[in-house]
Image 1 (spheres, rainbow, N blue to C red):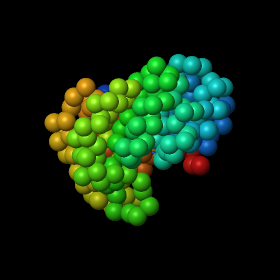
Image 2: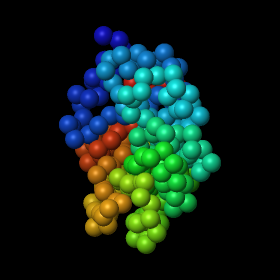
Image 3: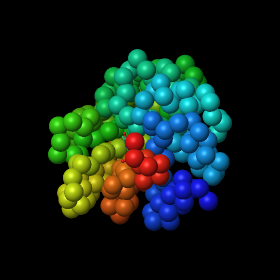
Image 4: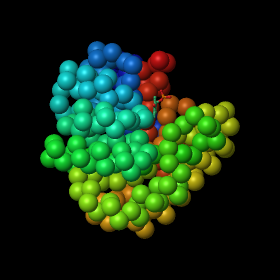
Length: 220
Ligand SMILES: *Cc1c(COP(=O)(O)O)cnc(C)c1O
C-alpha cells in the first residue's frame, strides 16, 4: 500500500464513523491527487479557485470538491459548475454571489458559514452574531440555489490542547443552537472543524468533516 493510502486509512480508523475525512490537496501535484483517487478516495479540499478548477479539469468527474479557503466574489463563477461544498462563506454578499452562479448552472451549492473561533487576529470568519444575522435574514428565502448546511471553524494555532478543545466545543454549541433556524434554506448538518494537528480533538468535540492535508501528503 502507498503511504498516502496508509495515511488515509490510519486517519479513517481513528475517527468515528460520523466524521468524514476531506483530503486537503492544495499545492500538491495532480499526480498525487490521481494516486489518492486510485485508492478509492473521492473527497478533496482546495483553498484557491484557480488551482481547484485546473485540477478539476484534469481529473475524473466523480470527485467531490470542497472549497475551504477565503473566497473573493469574482472567483465564484469558475467553480460554480462543479464545487460540492463551500466551507468559507463569511458574508451575505458572498452567499448571494454563490446563489447567482449556482442558479446559472442549475445547481444547488451547499455552503458552510465560517465562524471566527480562534484567539488570533489573522483568521477569517464571522462572529456568532453576524452568522445569526444571516440565518435570520428575510432575504435568505430568495436564495433558492444555496443551502446553508452547517458551520466551519479553525482553532488557534497553539500547543495548548485545552484551548483548542474549548474553541471547538464552543463552535459545536453554536452549531447546535443554530438548528433552531433550520428551514428551507438552512439545514445544520455539517460541522467542519479539525486539521492535521487537531483533528482528533475536533472529532471528539463533534466534528462531522475534518480537513486534513499534511498528515496525509506530508508538509507543504
Ligand atoms: C490547508 C488547510 C487545511 C489543512 O491543513 P493541514 O494542517 O495541512 O492539515 C485545513 N483547512 C484549511 C482552511 C486550510 O487552508
